[in-house]
Image (cartoon, rainbow, N blue to C red; front, side):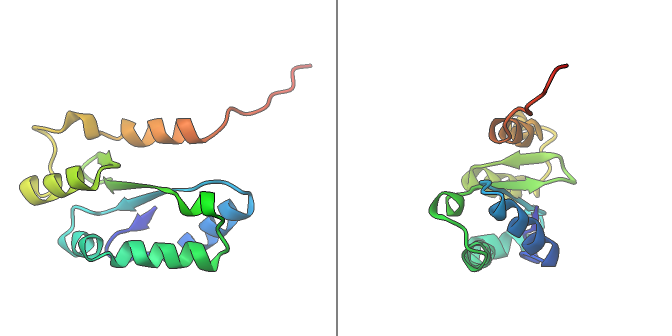
Length: 125
């Protein structure tokens, strides 16, 4: 989870380094995209550029560099993988999705997590 306005922080670097060392393919969630300062950094490409630099500096392989990016407003309870949908929500509703865009609720994030994380191995005795 990365604050879209602040970009990757120290904790992002730590968590990402652990995931990459375990050969996992991360899911990047850009949160607070409903804030104008966050959205401005996404539109300018600054946040994505910082993320790519971070992945590269941590030694991500080609598969890991092809990560999924989700655009999110946790406060308002929505998430989407489509930057154009996020733009529409941010620019037309200010992030408020109570009256529309029912298909971008937080289940989108849950579905991606469930798809990306393998089932645990269980030994039955």
